[in-house]
Image 1 (cartoon, rainbow, N blue to C red):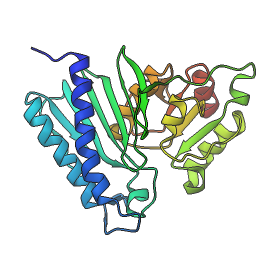
Image 2: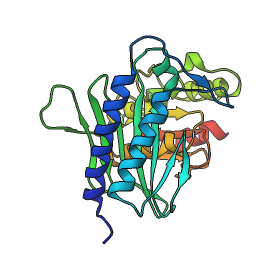
Image 3: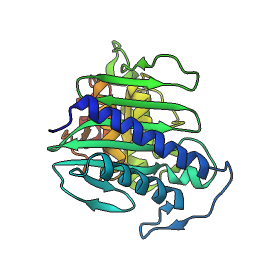
Length: 264
């Protein structure tokens, strides 16, 4: 029998618990050893260890499901597969800085139906499932809070706070120019202290531009933002997690205006 979305969400949260144990132990708060991949981005032993642990748990609990991860790659069927980024924000992780997370998504027949973004250092976790809303739990315990995107205002995009991943001060070239184009059309820039999509999901920003990434960067966050009332797409307006970016997360109300501003 095919699991339902509630069972899938419960498994995703268990996977996040296991990921937190490994990543928390690997994070020292100081610079750690790592290597550079072919594209120049860093990868640590913890990135790989988290992904392999999640793979092992999925193989045990859902042996018919496939997997797609940033470090280990794809295995199994694509019709139902878990999409994982063991450490999202490895640049921060290996520098001993906060702001990184583990991203866990489940894609079924081309639609991401479950997403978890978990930050063990801060004790916060964001999650969502299709039709179940988006939620945040914190380190103090107690019931989770339901997430909602920013309420509309009369000035629309011109007053909409925005953010970008990577942060603005880390961008150069065409990526920087694209972010500056968004800044010229939107309101105040909000520097991200974690992934900017989470700023959109809880109302701290109306728009997050992500200049590039793989499906493991977009999957979990796309469903969290959507279930909070927002929208995810590439710059053609398609909800495509495989295009490599740039991609947009927004409150939904200004989404088309942002696409227009960035593609004019």
